[in-house]
Length: 224
Image (tube, rainbow, N blue to C red; front, side, top):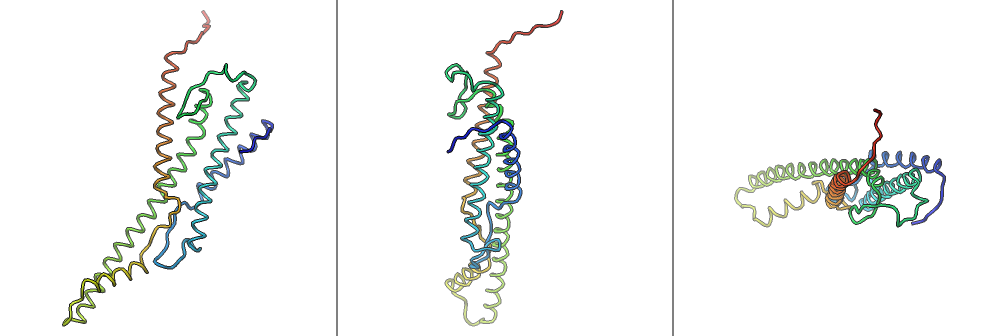
């Protein structure tokens, strides 16, 4: 990670650019794909190229969200003036093994978590769509294979098809005609990891706020 000093004006501009790039990738990128049989292609490309693009898409959006968080928190620190305060004097809370101020925690909750939820939703949608197509192709294949075997059995009524022959026919047809996932991310694992992080962060955030609100005192000067 490379540290560099930039103006708040430039940071805000970079924040806007980063936001647009995150939205573009989440809305348009593929995070899982499909291939038919032994075609060796997926989404109009070789499977190898498709896998590299999927991995690149995911890595890019994760990096952008992390950069967005870094810039947003730096702006929060600057605006609150804590950059000029001794670190040991700043009151912090621990959220998922990371020390941060309440303002930083709320910033992540309000601005970063929504992007992670948006990514999570797209991952689930794409996996759901692809899984449906895989299952549909398997069901259609089973019906087609059953018809093929029935027809072959009728044409060879004197000789019953062996179990081995039926298995060979079934395998050959599925290998060449069924739809299979192209999933270099192990997307279900990514979904589970991201879901757990979001749930844990929100749970700790809510608990921390409740605790802080019950302990903190404020002075209010009301008009008589």
